[in-house]
Image (cartoon, rainbow, N blue to C red; front, side):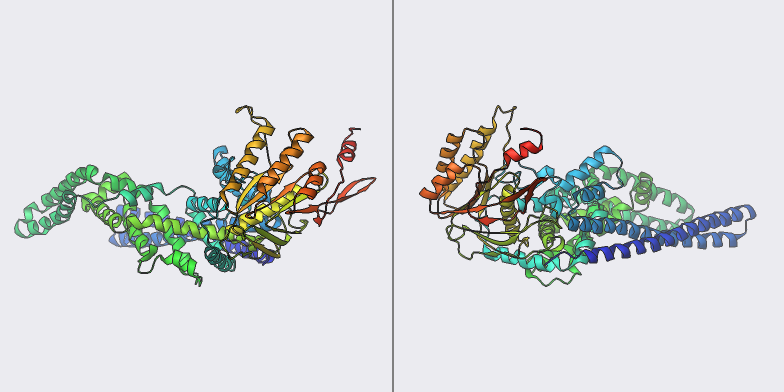
Length: 620
């Protein structure tokens, strides 16, 4: 599968045309609203001055027209908001296909003014809140950051979707993942990748619903909500029944009719005041949930109407067999919250409750919902999160020059899984138009890669690591072919010292390497990635240390890659090890500089360009 830039460029033109059309309609409706409002006010004022009843009637008719225009205009404004968000989503796809990380950042902060908002938008894009510096490979493989796997592939707009996708990229152990699970995810990803419009609709809808905040109020209420107390139910019923007094009084004692209405209003005021203690938790919950509930319901509706055939996707949307599903539950909650919106202003709340005990009805509906459906809500949220994670995994096929689904070793034997055989691999974070592909095979053995500075060694082992991470998330990998096992990934690449922890670069590297060596004792499949081992010490210690590490890692259930300039170590491995493959990168020289082809080849390179590079920068 490969990126379809033309689809998104054509989509951009359609969105621009729709925005222009709705913009014109919005302008016309704004004018009509103003005219109808002024006309309504004019007729009513005229009726007051002239005392002509027909003017009141005309004013009332025009007021109804004004309300209808407001509703239509509100719908158009909502559509414009949606199209603006859809435009940003579409622009993000174009930026991803072009590998334009600056463009992604600019889209994320577009329209924001406050520094705090801009910072939060960047953080959501980069995923830095999920960063784990001590993780097995997080920093080394650019999982999070400005130019990272997360910023390139993340299309989840909800807080829980972002978290789920981040977790899928950070799996340190894969022993709990079966081949069947991975194939099921791959099948789901394939169908999602084929539905561009659905993914974009989902993302734009979530953006309109401001789903970046955790649905804490919703989840807390669902978990802890309870039915209203009997006394509250009795007061609510009395608040309704009291109005039966009015027709009875008008029939039997009409002279007290007006007084009976006042009595009912006063009675309901007392009921309303008493309800502050009885209904407080429900009213508070009703204020914090409406927008998120409405948006989650819309997201489920989009997915239900998309016509998915994949079993995993359908089970996530519909729930377990026999379940009433998320939509039925959320529709009931949404109806209750729509009632709660009628009391959005304190004055409105008072007026409504004087006429009818609205707070008691809202509390009753919310309490019943929490008891009947509340325990299921976390599962509905988790299903959406999993679907969004799968949408992110589908991005490889939508934005990269080419991609394919990897094949996994069927066996559960750790030794059989120590395999990585890739053809035409590319690193997804490099410039898509100029990136160079490479092929490499590792099967229960270790690849040592040599070559000059800047020739591509580190990028090569990162490419292997990144492709493995993507494969284990269920996504398509940027390669023409890939067969691999289910492996834990561990790396030692970006090593930095720490003044705060009184740690030298060499000590920091020792800790990373010791973690890899200790993991080798677990008899679980391991893929290790080590860049320039023990660079922080003298040559003799580096050589002996590297040989010791290689011996500890020479096991049938371990495979890995190591880059080095240590040719003394290379000479000894060629004599003492039979499980090592040698690869190298090379370059060519001219009067104007060095040229790299970034193509991996078999064998050992003993070239060094350090002196040439020093000369280029004026160090001779």
